[in-house]
Every structure is written in C-alpha cells, then in structure tokens.
Length: 304
Image 1 (cartoon, helix red, strand yellow):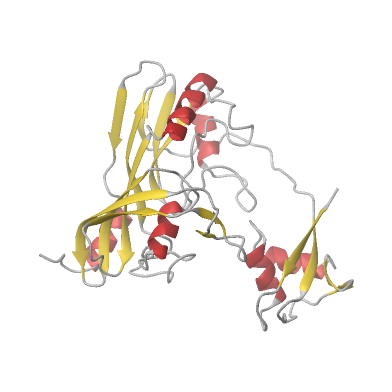
Image 2 (cartoon, rainbow, N blue to C red; image 1 turned 90 degrees about the vertical axis):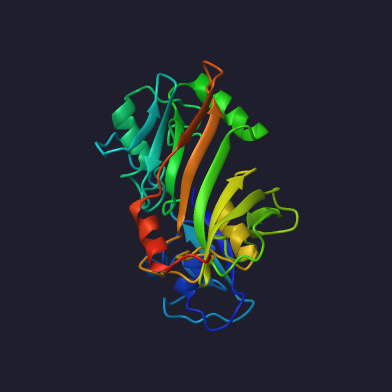
C-alpha cells in the first residue's frame, strides 16, 4: 500500500519541487519532479505542475511509491582497516562514503565493502540492511567507525554507546573565532519541525551533549576537538551552528562550499571502547586526512 504524506508550505514563492525535496526525507528535487509529472502531487484534489509556486498555508498531498529495495551485495571496495580481530573491525572511513544503503545510495557503501571483506561474519542485530553497523557517521564526515562481527559483540558495543563508555572524539574547523578555550553544549536535538531533512535544537528533543576545546585559532576560523557524550544525528554540526559557529563547508547548517571543500570539515579522530570479549580497553587514533590538512593550510598561520 502506498503512503500519503501531507506537506504544508511555510512561505510563498517557493517552487513545489523544491518544497518537497526540502520537506520529505531522502527525496531529491528530481525525484519530486517525477512524482509531480506522474500526477502524484495534488492540491485540493487536483494535480499540480512542477513549476508551481507555493503560497503560505497551502497543504499538498503527496503519494509516495512503494520503495524498491535493491539486493544487498558484497563489493570489492578498498578499506583502510585500523583494527580487526574475530569480534570487531574498525575502519577509517573516507569522506564521501555512505555507511549503509539508503534511497539514492543503493550500493558503494561501507556495508557493501564490509560484506566483501568479512564475508558472512557480520552481526545481524542492526537488521539485514545494516549488518555489523553499531553506529554511523555522515557521508561527508571521515574517520573511525566500528562494526561488529557477531551479535554478542554488537550487543556489548551498543550497551557501551548507551552508557557512554564508548568514547568518540572528533576534530573540526568552524567558522569564526571561539572566544573561550573550551565549553560544553547541552541542548536537546530533534528533527527540524519544518525542514525534515535537518536536525535542530528543539525543546523536548533527545538530550545531546558535546564537549569542545580549541586546538588552534585562525583568522575567522577555529580548529576544535569535540568529544561526544551522546550520539545524536548531526550532533556536532547542529551544536556548533547553534553556537553561531557552523562547520566550514557544511551545506546544511552552514554556508556551504568554502576553501575548496564541499561538505563539513569533520573527522572522527579517536575511538575508545572496552573489547567485548577480552574486557581490555582499546584506544585507537587516526591521522588527519589530506582534505582536512589542505583546509588548515588555506587558513593561514594560526594565532600565537
């Protein structure tokens, strides 16, 4: 059975295809145009044209086609393995790689690569579309991500995420000069009430805590280290934007491409966890990737 969603215009003059792409998760503008051309977007019962401009308060009915899931296949994609044993594998994910298949990204993901690398030895706790995946990082975020090779390891690592004993430290470059040397953002995060593709600080949202400290200040920019106490979607990006210091290059919460970088300048640099089988502490780090170093080089000399 097809789903019907209702989209309400919050402003006048926006093209209907742009409104749908902004409001419906995982929908692109071209997909919205195809729905309109197929007569699946209506206003007051009548199909709309794709060049229609909205007016405040108008509500559009959108019939969503049933999703067609591509078969999940193993793909020989090179991986930068930082740590691996019989229970876990830690990968240094490059920016631009999606973690698991999703609409618009049916393959070429970290999951496809892990399936080839690990064979059948990935946990099934996360579901058949996300084998082994314990936590996620965004497509344009690089760095360390852990996957479980069996259900026991997955459950143990998930418990560490829940009790916050699994530590994740990121580095990023933000716009503007941070006045303080360190601080904590404790602000709840939820889906944006209007733009469903974005997250936002929303009263009543899930508690989100980010601890940050300055590594270096530049003219108009600051290099930060951020430690996650919680792990909400887009947490660092949302919290830094809330402070008035969006991440350099962030196309959703900032000003977009800058210093030759399209997408947020954010790298998961450190990962610390208790090994699910041995009980020993595992602390892993990775070097800053070339794109990050290139950005730093374009910022000029750091302040003394």
